[in-house]
Length: 298
Image (cartoon, rainbow, N blue to C red; front, side, top):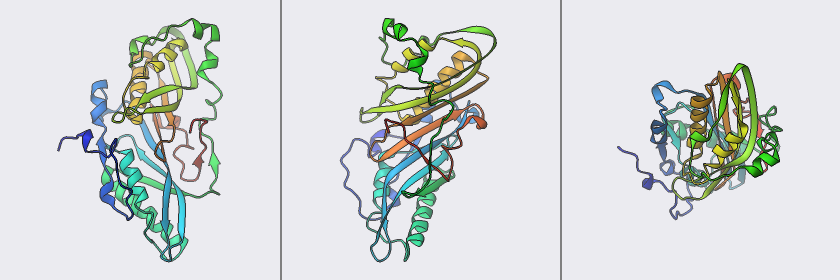
């Protein structure tokens, strides 16, 4: 059956469900966006994960005691599908009025198992589900990159002299020149802004990048390129994969990592991370132990 974005709950008025209902979940094929950027499932140019933090989960014990948790979902980027965000929001809210066990521990375990089973079945891949409470330990990811703001790596005079006139994705803006030695470049930036593929609502994200390449990268050109997403309409995962592929094609890196931590919308923030090598993936992002510390935007 061919995928139709109009079949999703995005952009439509939806009643809040009151009882658990796995049929609320909806999946989207990743191939919808990948093929036009020459990204194919048979030979992905990256490894990676999608990390979702969901803040609107509450359920009951059998005697009606409410329990609130934050859900961290982790699944691999080589899965055929991704879960549609509004369907996940509705699904999680459907737990609100049902009891799942005599004790807090029993109810929490029952809900965790249900979510894991339902999403694993939906996405046809293993989905890791972690439930956090207010006392769960929090840790900040991208420690080595967080202080390297792209805006501070390009002089203010240079930024103010540039003409930012491209607002649809323009990879031709990227500039570099060949070097005789390996160059190491890493930065974070809050320049990333695109729009939802269905609702056209703005999506804001902090982007984290590390590159090892024999190219000397003109960082001002990366600023121009990221600004060119301002009128693009894509899902979060698609944007990160587009940036990764453009950097891969242009800079020919030996190692590359691109990740985004997106602003929470509808009680959910989505954080895709793609890398050329598994060791480049920040362990905090995919840890079952730590809650991920939020960015200023989140």
